[in-house]
Image (cartoon, one colour):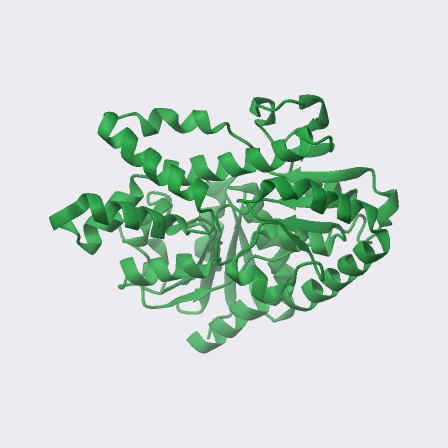
Amino acid sequence: MIEKLVLCKGNIETLGYFSEQMKPTFEKLGYKIFMFDFSDPQTSIRHLKKFIVKGRTALITFNFIGLDDYELFQEKNRQLLWDVYDVLCINIMVDHPFYYHEILERMPKRSIQLCIDRDHLAYVQRFFPQITNTGFLPLAGTQYDEHEHFIEKPFEERKMDIVFTGNYANPKTFEKHITRVNEEYTKFYYEIINDLIEHPWLSIDKCMEKHLMRELEDEKTEDNLKDAMATMIFIDLYVRMHFRGEVVKTLVDHGFKVDVIGAGWENLECRHPENLIMHKECKSADCLKYIQNAKISLNVMPWFKDGAHDRIFNTMMNKAVVLTDSSKYLEEQYHDQTELFYYRLDELDKLPEVVRTILNSTVTTKQIIHHAFERTCREHTWKQRAETIHSMLLSEN
């Protein structure tokens, strides 16, 4: 019977924030909680060992935090602490699995691997069949309550027309990785990049696989394919940033003011930089405050073709309009112009007209905001995600 939970903070701010959002629900469900604080790991590790009850404790973490620092979590016999104390480790992976091949090969004995995109889940199940306990768990949204009270700002009174919360890097940043070997490799990498740009509905690994199968010839094994994809993560970053920049550039160059919250936006090449209003990178709660002051919260999916980003749920919880490219999962959950507005990455010329429709149709827009808020509150908060994990814990008992 799992009675105690270990959550993590002090490492990646966003992921620690997710854990903090689930904590109250876990406490209401009767679990005792220990927050492992990576800002003071030595103190935390001492208290952790006193907290754990063998066989009755679970770690719930994101992106392998707590699982990837071998020295910190090793016992004297070099066994992983989680294995020694028979801790069930639930990891929620918020990026594509090819970023984590090495650690996926050495998961703790008792573990559950959850993915936020169903394509990611299929990838893990295909290339890591030894991980038998897997599942799909989408991200979720948080409503920002200042002084524990949500103050709704009417749509027409919101100060910003369009906000985007997220960092930017010019795709040129990744060219050193693309050109690092020789001309033949450079050509091969750009073929994949151009394919994804021309066909942005393709998942990253399926596109890579299509090109790799042609190159591998007689060496078309699953291991060779898996190993090759892990060496090309810069393609994912290149294409993500390409479209993030193109979407924002399309809007500012058509005369819309776009407030961007995050680092690197001074590197965006556009004709009208005066329309780009830059704010410093900030913590998760501050991003929610910006969304509460915006009419439209723009999302460019980080190449999740069968999942969703928390920006979408956060926007709905804080009553701005979601403007996003789509995914299979999103289209199952939310309908265009009923709960949000979709745009297509291959039809960015139509994006400005979508923005005009949102800004000029106040009554309809308010209805869409209301529908999105109601749906997300019912189904897509961290409370619901914690309850789903609780069900998994019960099934493990």
